[in-house]
Structures are given as C-alpha cells and as structure tokens.
Length: 479
Image 1 (tube, rainbow, N blue to C red):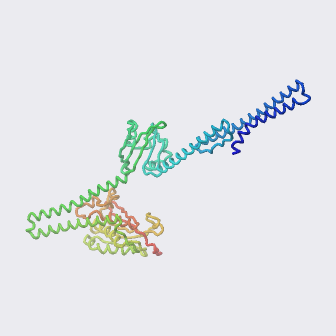
Image 2: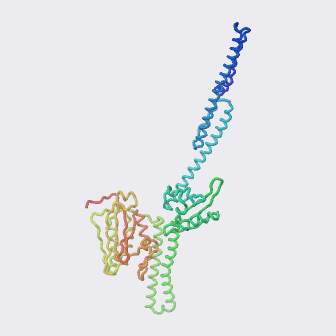
Image 3: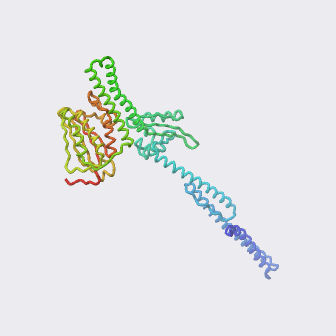
C-alpha cells in the first residue's frame, strides 16, 4: 500500500520542501545582524531564494518529464508488440499523475486484446486443422481470379504445389474448361454455381464456386469434392445389375422355351421330351451355380466365411485341383504341366479355399486353350509381394497358371476380376461360366493377405498369378 502512494507523496512533498527550505534560508538571511536595514543584503537573499526556487522547479520538472517519457516509452513498446501480434505484459502504474488513467485504460485494452487474440489463434488452429486434413479441395481467389489460398487436398487433386498455386491465375491452375467456365459464371452472376465435372477417365469432381463479399475482402471460394470412388461404385452397381440381368436372361429363356415346347405337345414324344428336360436341367444347374456363387461371394466379402489358416505345402494346394480337372483337360486334348522347385517353403493357407482358387484358374486355362496346347503351373519365392511388412520379413510364394489360349485385350484386362465381367472372347458360344469365379478368387487371395493379377496379350495366351505368405515357422532351405 505504501508503494502505491509513495510516488504521489514524493511529487507533492518535493515542491513543498523546496519552498520551505527557501523560506527558512530567506528568514535566516534577513535575521542576520549584517542584513539589518541593508537593501543590498535583502536583494541578495531574494535573488538566492529565487535561484534556489528555480533550480528546484527545474529538478522537479526534469524528474516528472523523465517519468512521463518512461511511461510513454513503455506504452509505445506495448503498443508495438500488440501490433505485431505478440500479447504484451501490462504497463505498471507508478503514480497518480495524469498518465495513470491513460495507463489503466491501456492495460484494460491489452487484456481485451489478449483475450481476442487467444480466441482468434484458437479459431485459426481449428481452421488450419480443418483445411489440412479435409478430403475436399478448397481454393480462395480474389475478384480478378488470383489464387490467394489453397489447401493440400486441392493441390493433390489439381496436381500442383502450394508455392506455384498461390498467386497464379485460377484458369491456369484449374486447367479444365468446365471448371473455368463455372468460375466465370459465378463471377458474372454473383451467385453460387455447382456442377459435376468429369476430368478424363480417372477423376470425377463435384465443384462448387461461391462468391463472397464483406467490408474488407471480395472473392470466390471453390470447393472440389472427389467423387471418383463413388462414381466407380455406381458404375460397378450399374454393371452388376446389367450383368446379372444378362446372365439370368439366357437360362430363364431356355427353361421357358422348354416348358412351352413340352406344353405344345413334346410330352407325347418321350425321346424329345427327355432331350428337352435334360436341357432344362442344365439351365437350372447353371442358375443354381450362379446363386450359390453369389451367396459365397457375399459371405466372403462380409467376413462371414472365416479362414482356417495352417502351414500347407504348395503341392497339396495344386495337386488336388489338377487331379480333379485332368479328365476335362484330356477331353480338350490339353496337357497339364506342374513344375515346382525343390525345398519350396510351406505357406499359410486355408487349403480348401486356395484349392478353389487354383481350380478356377486351371479350369479357365483349359477352357480357353486350343486343342494340342498345354497349361503350365509353377511357383517361386519372392522376398515381398508389396502388401505389408510381414511379407517383407518372411516373403511370399507366387503361384502361376499359364495357358496358350486366346488371351485378353488390354482394355478388358483391368476388369477381369469384377463380378460377372467377361471379355468379348469369353462370351463366345459355348464358353459357359457365370463370370463370378475370378471375383471369388480375388477375395479369397486378398483374405489370405496376398494379391492376384494377370498378364495377357490377345492371341498369345494369359498368365494368372497370386501370392500367399510363407508360413512363419518355416524357413527356406538352402538350394
């Protein structure tokens, strides 16, 4: 409490003390015997008192001036720090002078400034996180189309760097006439514009351009939402409906034709009736197989068909499918060749499921191979198949099935593992199949932590390959 009032007391006492000293000195001088009735002595005493008084006032004025300058310097430094965005410390009030009220008001302003700066900083952090991690691309341009801001998602969608994007023209950055026209329309109309834009065959965007205007800024917010995956799913769904309709139409039409033929009198001819009933039975078997494979594919995709993984030799996975299909290959006059290296490590596999994959691949190879050709199976070890860290440590086995058949076109090759998809060559008369086998094979292999792919050229045959992880408790023997 004393420190609070020390400066005011000091400021008040100093002038009073100076006057008191002057009065005491003046009285002492005038009371001296030598000054009695002397005008010169009186003049000298008054001059001395005046000099002391002026000197005291100068000292006091200098002290107050330095105090004010120090206070103003502190206020100026605090104001500069505040202008730079750095929350300053409050300025201490040293006295009750005329600057004290200004200092108190300034400190209250600093408190409000610090609070608002903290709120703005927190909002900026939240906006930065939102901008950094949102999957939608965002750009802000000024009235003339100069890019002022771009987030990482937009740089990825537009294949550009932030350093190059900021400051460039929006037309130069978007590089697509529909997106540029959308921005120009929003600029001309002053209203929000929304449009779906397909860029080539690999990117499908939902673009929205929104004009904004306030007292300080005017420009446009561009939001780019990547709907490529949604578009792909929609395409798959549409193709699935189309394909299943196509696959069901043929057997149902055949069964209906059989029924109509029998109703028209074929029942009266036993040989004809048996032939038509046999044909109807084959079509019903096809429908049953399709339903069964659809149900199996649904169970695998939904995880309702768990795998039972055990260390299994590759020969066990391939010999049973080969024996099962040997009679079919013999009828087609196609040789089956198995070439497995010695000391091949065991793999972690559900034997029944992997045998299903091998059976499907061998069956397709036989079906599309010409008479007199061969289907070859072999396996080899790779250090990693690129799937995960486990394979990098323990490696994987690649199983390959090669035929000399009609091959697959480059256009169809990326889609052969889709449901119901068949290449044009596979739709030739008598090829059979539901188009679900490779889709099921893909899901089974992926459930094992492996991958499946194909290499093919039209007229040159095809090679289907899939990987299985090596069993961890086994090690590869030295060759």
